[in-house]
Length: 258
Image (cartoon, rainbow, N blue to C red; front, side):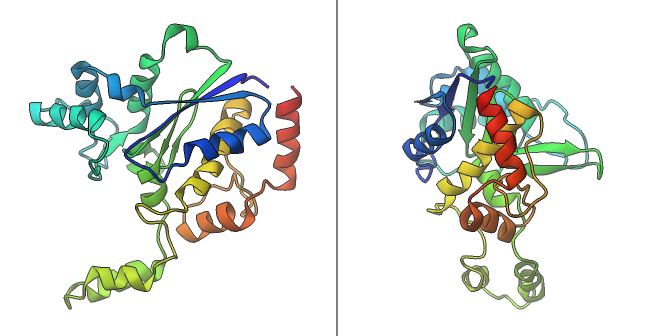
């Protein structure tokens, strides 16, 4: 196994991340040391806040363009470093740019292939897709360090088609959105959802498989590496199946034995 140590950086703004349970989960599968740390951003400078504010996306149809942030935007990022009780507004950030910033914050002695870094964040990470020439929300930004976005897990996989249909057809009638959400409650992940930590287990596996093999996802719905584009598939593969498919069980054995 290329990895000898995994470091998980907590996101205190999302208490549903049960980080100790995630450590236990990883240690049951992989023969490596797993360590947890506070988010690096808690100790970051105003310059880092400026760099992160530069990552914001304003045009979904254009590839990344560096944004020149205002003083208010920089102050907003600084506040989020330290005020962990603050709820993050849904702002889109370029995932690869954010990844570069976090990578530069890792100390030189720990910036090696054998140490695998995973950052949890409540920021919505996105990547530009040249297939349809637009940005898409992402739950996982792979490589080392990897980023797992809790907002991405909630927002990127689509809710049921009927949910969107009800929103559109009832919009002009003044129907309360909360009533529609209540109608489909349980069919998708919500903010402050207790199921989130179990879902994150699957994304941790995807991050590690990608780093070890270059292939993070599986096309089989009966596998925790399934790349879910719908919330119903995400809930099924991560909460009902909760296992790797036979092929990826074999890949896991090869990873551990090498």
